[in-house]
Image (cartoon, rainbow, N blue to C red; front, side):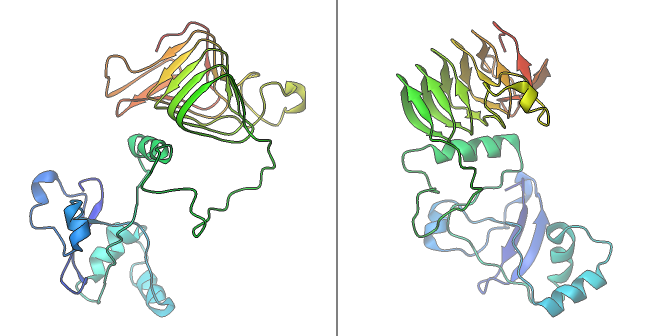
Length: 265
């Protein structure tokens, strides 16, 4: 709750208070009336999801009245709850804010669970994405458990558990990936560099043979060499080094980075 704008409502779901990122010590008394199911889940603090509905007339009036404001949640909503009837809807389904490295990491790994709280495979609530026209993933002699592997990927004799593997990812021979998000690449590693001069990045993106990756986010077009180990073994919360960052215990390799052979992170 301290990471969000927290609303307090009455029994009619009218917002009576709006508190921007209250500290843990300030949360007492800021619970709102919710369903018994939400209460059982400990979801009594209503965080702003950033989804607002206005009538056109009211929206124009507010924008004119608060011409210097830049944020609905921080500025406009708190200012009008004393002068207008502002109501909220306690959303009972799955929701996650991915504004931090940790929340982005957790939300992606959640999708790889056997029965995730949010599923990509609901025929009544389809997700529409870019039609990239890529070939299906190719997997050779590998062990895959609780993972999502995107189209255009190639996995060779490797182990992948509880991970998300993105577009055009290349996972080389005898590589292990655990609890990680691999974002893939904008181009195939075997694509002639002279024919993709409009794209930046190393010549051979992907994870080469006999490497080990755990608890990491590998951004697009990253080239990880042979026999590399990427793992936060010392449980560092925040840190950085050559071509890597650690944020909230997650190791992040930035886009287009090159990790040489035998690197130990």
